[in-house]
Length: 266
Image (cartoon, rainbow, N blue to C red; front, top):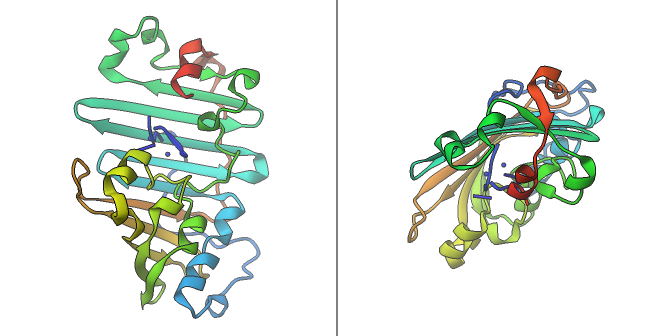
């Protein structure tokens, strides 16, 4: 999967990890409390599209889980801060990644496990956050969580193209989604989409909304094709309007980033 594609690894491709405010599948009412169940559109597709408005406000926590990765994160636009952390493992490879952004500063900590032994100079950085030079990191979307939106699944774009969508219960929906139309999603890895071919245009999904019509859970069911194993990619959202701002690491945990970090995330 692709840290943010959002990624390269949201992943190296899709990398997110612990150290972020705890996320759970419950939600916290927004301070305004202006929404209610009566405001949720009756049409299933319209309800799903409307459910992502809270994500656009950029004040929530989330979790991501799939066969080879588990991660957590927080976005807090009021403070221009975000944090994403992830554990990724596949075919004997394991990696932990933690990225903190409090504009204009960014810190990243990477643990490549046994691979550190094979990368000159990297062992010294294993337990440190590397502070990035904003000038050098400029334009690198894999190191800028706040640049192009704040939803790792890009549910807003995804729901615009759903088909066969139906309401299956109170706040519960199912249908099919065209993943080829989603470019910035943890569920839309480029290599996976190529392998899936036309099947990628009709991927089953389920979604859950809270009583105020906000998205709380999205599950994408990827079928087995070729080297792609059948799996579920699950994203949950919580703490709408009440997320805790990301916190900068303490000075004793920080060093200046080396050139390898910039290259790694290009």
